[in-house]
Image (cartoon, rainbow, N blue to C red):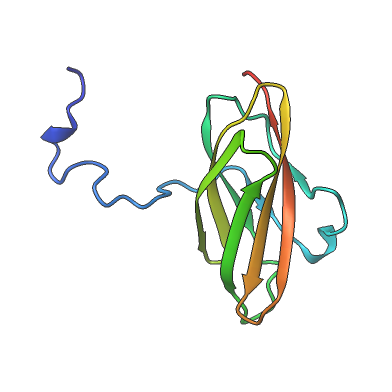
Length: 129
C-alpha cells in the first residue's frame, strides 16, 4: 500500500472544514450586473467532476451589512448542488453531475441582515473533458 491514512497522527481529514481550498471559479457580483438572463458563465464542467464554485457578494453588500441566509439551486436535478456555505460575503457550494452537452442554470440567492434579497445565476456548461 502506497498511502495509509492510519499512519498519520493526528489522522488526516479529521474535522476538516467542508471547503479546505478556495472555491474556483469565484464569480464577483456587482450592483450593475443585474438584468441579464444569467450573470456569469462557468468554465466547462466534466460530467464526472466534483467542483467547488463560489460567488463573492462583498462588493454588492452595503457597508456594515452581511449575508444572513443563502440558497443555491440548479434548474435540473441532473446537476447536484450541496455543501452550501458563506464566509465574509462569499457563498460557496459543491457542484457535481450533469449530463454531457447539457447547459444548466445555477442560482445563488441571498438575504442580507438588513432584509435585502437578490440572486444571480450562472450558466454551467457540462462537456466531456
